[in-house]
Length: 492
Image (cartoon, rainbow, N blue to C red; front, side, top):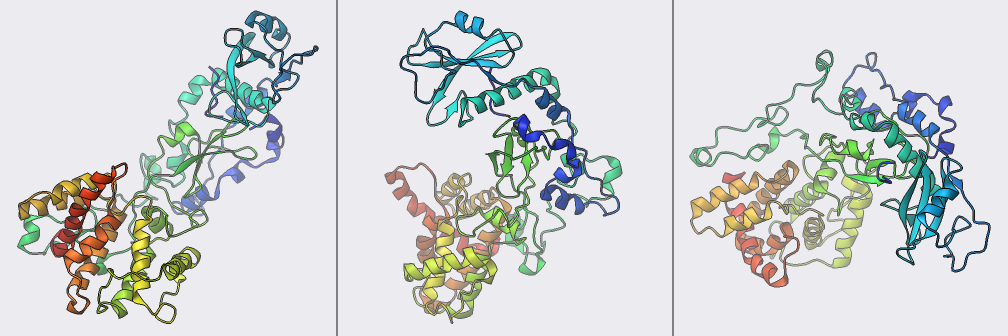
């Protein structure tokens, strides 16, 4: 089978011998490594050259041109097109040299085209497609020559090194250069911080003396019952945001240290931290992404956990700064959060955060109307790609809201909160504390019910609901937020 999912042009690799392998380690690798080892003890990983050598040995493509004129030749094929010939005729034409190829029209299915390719003394046939680019599987190529080059590399390497490739993820360098503390060699463990017990994140312990109510409803695992003064920037777990990537020049996998072969789409790259790995290695990389501000370009519409890890913060700066501004000068404003500000100025605040981050100026000197700040905060939550109350947790919160008994409803809300990612849970805790203070200021006329109406659809939404179901859910969304505000001192 012509596999095109895990595949650098041999020509591009010609200068490899002059490169220092250690220089090929990415910034991400070195940065993480230096956080673990002392400078005098750090040893760059040894990049493995076996697969690179195989790529150099792979057969080169040899186009077999048709010497006669062919009627109805598709405009996107050249002289390698031989018209409607049989498999047997193609096999006879191609038996001259390894890597030779031609294109023919299928006799069984006229109007469809086949790439015939000579590999290991056999002619292999692949259904060929064109949609502006040429492809036989997922990868798209500008030319047939590039497609065949990539295909020969892939066939050769995956034939010669099938067993080697299957074992690439065993004993990866990833665990030895500071990306993770899992399964390290005993001699390296002394350099690494001790891992916390599963229920206690990185040196944080829950406050115990919270009264009878919290003995009945245990405090949330992770961070929910911590007082503000107890916090340091938490180490939230985050999965890598891998996307298929074409690397220019020779590149090595930062998980297994093996060469990333092929002409295009040789592997995947994390869009948040820049980690480069094979597609198969990406499935076993730990969830320890450390987002880099060079890759995280905006604040609004950015995944919440990605944003706080990139800025080494507890919560998104939008949430902190807007709430601090509101509590400094806006708690007594009538209709707080209910009255909308001018949409153009709200967009200005959004652009200021995207451009300047925590240096954005949202003071009264720039935005005198406090409703612009409330609008900017609500817009931030509405534009989260994953809502503050996540899709996975959504049905559990909705079921909790439907429970008539108050104590059982509170227990169900507590259990639902445990399903939130830590960064989401901490942000929700901080927001609910703020909204509780809003309700305690009688001048603004905003009750928990009013805030529930405003924030229900803002903080939670379910994907794929029809209009009628979504309309019915609004009532329970209000009840969820109202319950979180009312019981903030118990649940958080």
